[in-house]
Length: 448
Image 1 (tube, rainbow, N blue to C red):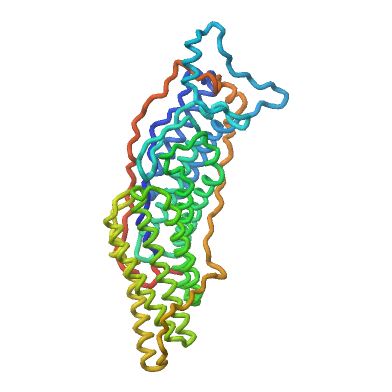
Image 2: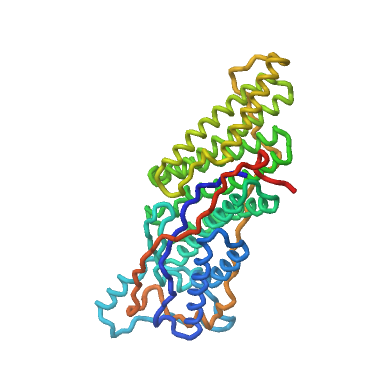
């Protein structure tokens, strides 16, 4: 299997107590705040550990999202019952008090599609890559940040499963493949359904940059496709098909790197080195298996030219391995040039090239062309796609009685309640242990 050594850190957050103070005016409204607080804490306890199972993560996520949606989307009054009206300003309030409240209130106006609670509390999260802390009065920001970490967890869980042994079984390969496609679907959902709903997007909020999210989508899809390449090799599919899938995988990693060009290089330098390294490796794969396909057609001269290009690209990947290890930035300490995934490809390509040159000297006697043979770039099948992500429905706990128990309006926050400044500490993540043992086969994937 592949080696997914680059994983950006989880976003960190401060405690969110869902403390609405006097604005939670009924026991029912206060109870749902307690439930939301506990559900959030339970989910945040799972996310730092990639060893947790997918079902536990999904159950905890659905529980919290179901409650969170009630703070984002309105709960309608039963048919025939008039909606409660928000409090109005007391005529006896002084002009100074009114100005104080106006200054304290979030500037954004809520629409009829928004819960009256959507911008009532301050939500604080760090950026995954930079660590910079950003706060917003917007529960959509909370949903995006939670889902962002969930997407990262799926990539870390996939990396953990893939790194569990030198050669993983078919069921494990399927889990890795599924997790990476789910992660791609989560980031796609954020991009397509949530980013545009934010009240504001600070310039330094790197995680909210559409190009950064696109890079995650492409990277997750490319990594899922790496599983397809390994399986195609293990099942001994046609060399031309393996070459075509490897070329598409190269393209996905390249596009992910290109998506980050607009981001400050000092922020994403290490990440881009990883993406460029992977793109070089899979272009090397593409030319290697194209060489095998050409040899099957008795085009030994062209096969040698293609395999020599594969060797060159593998050498380029080796340089990028060293550059990644030396690069500063978010990510993990790794020396990918020592990993079996990198070494195995080099050994395989050299063995095939030696065979081709030997056969050409004894049998074919073909001239080696200067021009590089064209690659098959359109595989008929084997391409990975994101798994569409769907939010859990709003919890049945959100009844009209619960919602109406919050006495709040966007224009008049509770003067007596002040947002507490809570420290945001980096998340202590459980490390992913990597194996450096050689697999017993070329792909590192076992098919039972």
